[in-house]
Image (cartoon, rainbow, N blue to C red; front, side, top):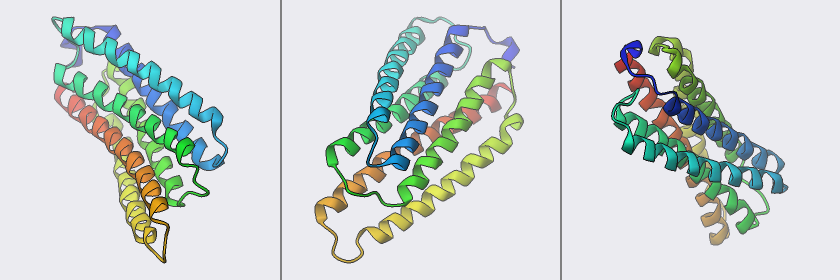
Length: 207
């Protein structure tokens, strides 16, 4: 049970701060896609999220190394901070591609994928903020169902994108650039989903 575990608010604080950065980054990516090709403000904000997330990640690793007892299993904390930082890092890398590649347009499915990331990030954030409140897995069933639905959309959008990518006689360089954008975004989505799966196991083990 959660109430039998030692309380270390700093661990919870850092998990919540990382989750907040994940949500912020996902929203900024949505803004980039919707306002493309104008996105300077969002690029700066995402970079600030990455810098802050990196700092939190490093502090959490150090705390995990030094702590004798942790409020959650060490491997779960390590998995959560690693996956959440990964979401922000991959999203930051993606955002810089928008600046470097100077694309004229984006494939429409990128909009859907950015929304899918935001949906999963929001669920992740809600569960993270419920940890210290000792909530149970059943409390988040609708949210976890929303993640499953979003991942079905991710799969559908991926198939649509790949089906369209090689139609006609596309410029090979444009194909490479657009595919890398989608690959980076999907990696961010997968890492966000992995974090929610870790949280589901945490809730199941400690509920």
